[in-house]
Image (cartoon, rainbow, N blue to C red; front, side, top):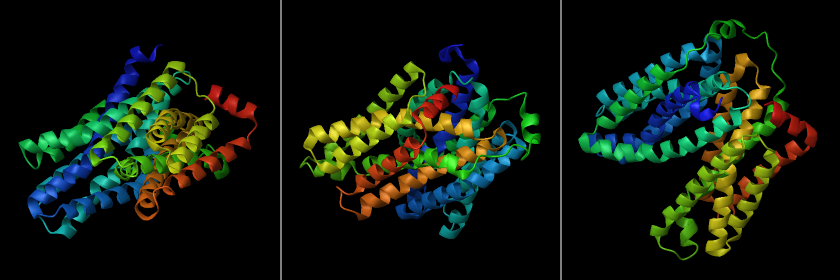
Length: 379
């Protein structure tokens, strides 16, 4: 079956985009809410930080719970809890800061394993042959959600301060309605821990790939302004860097989807190494745009290859927790990359992403080339 006529996939895709949308809306929505009700935009930043920490800390434990009850059963409950958290936060706007900080924990805890749960359901929505293409198309749609979330908040805020949070709650409810229902869910939930998991060493190369994606991407996404100022360009040129990154990412994912094969992840890691070194080297506008384009073009394929190979390793009764761990590791990489931009010389920040990509590549080089090729085909 073609992916573009695969009705179950597009239902899954609609559900996961609705589930992702509130997280992309949250930073601006929290800031606008606290600025309007307390006069402090800083409180909005604190709320977002607490929200992200709650997501990261609880992602794996909540993912493990999803594995026990089954993602198709557990995801609607988590999404409704997340929606309730946004509603309660909106109703409590204007309350003392400690109260708001405590209330934002509810949507943060509930939302931590949503991505892992949806990714687990994708394994049963499309067959192995369509999986690389499905992940690549999803990566392209994710770019639209990342851009559209803040824009939607800015538009909804014109209708009222509380409207963006209400829309976030509605998006969670819509995602809950769209969660795929699977006939095999009871068997999966009852399987418990009977299936042994591979040793941690088997996952490390792929977790390192996920970490590298977050680490190197954050170097670009957080630092477009200093990158163009280093070249003597005005601040108005900063969006050009993000546009090239996003465009290259969409193009890379589109090409990867068209090929429909997993490919060798070491090729994409090599692109990260080359792009990161050129970015650190300050070779003017040609070097900046070329490095950003190479990194963006390799991002979607590397994410897809990592996801496919992780699915191959993870036992079915531990996929939600495993994918949640992968997304958490990637988020940690993004946070550390952002910190590197803030405290290190600009030329040195991309070097950490290069170093991480080289380590991930070295881990994969230890596997025979034939083994990696087989892994890609059978995944």
